[in-house]
Length: 308
Image 1 (cartoon, rainbow, N blue to C red):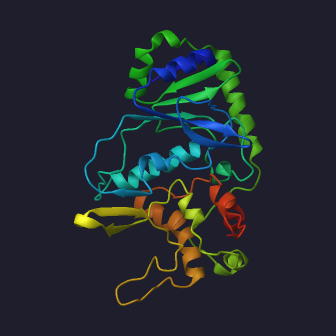
Image 2 (cartoon, helix red, strand yellow):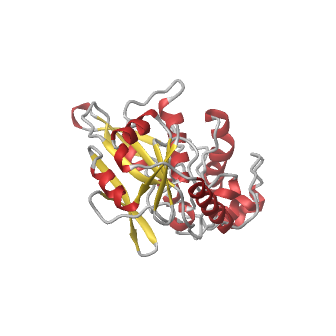
């Protein structure tokens, strides 16, 4: 749908024009966290500490009709955007349509300008820049941003604020492509191919470090398991759940096919690399590396996958 340019000075003016709630990354030492605008912000760097799936799929919510404010999330990185697209397949396509998963949020994504030590998207043949699923995507240059238009909503937004945008020259495209190539080269390691035939013996040392805390699944931008509870007046409440909890697979009568830790650990890998490709035509891991950062057992999931 085309590409435009916006200066860094004009960007703040553009953000002020957005309606409803606006969330954008703020840099905190060597990390990035989501903050409600107005705030100091940046679009540089890599993904935030918490995934943006929190804006689309609440960790705890009462399942009833409710008013929702207009919302824009700015600065979503490529791994997280792929996670959101995956969750859309889970909740908004096929036989099961979830009316509570928000697909009305305006998505303004951004290229990674450098990586975090646990990032490994290129090892799964992904790129550290968004390629689809955004309304607008921002690629940072020295004096501003190239803005790729990815939807009719994004195009309408640019048209409404045409005075803030300018045409793009070939040198800006070259500079953007050079930046992307540089970031790709930052991620080292061999390509990872998981064929579904998981040999437990190759990863037994990693399994023994697991403490079933579920940090890996709660911080994952693509995990989607939940359970339902009933509160007063028969209100249904949905909570995030985790396949790493000992009681996750327990059924009526107390039987539990994944009571043992090794079964749960391997199930997580199979879910992402074997079951999800069959069910949703997409793997369920997008190599953000958050599970590595969050793991109490200091398990490097990238190493686990490469061992397989």
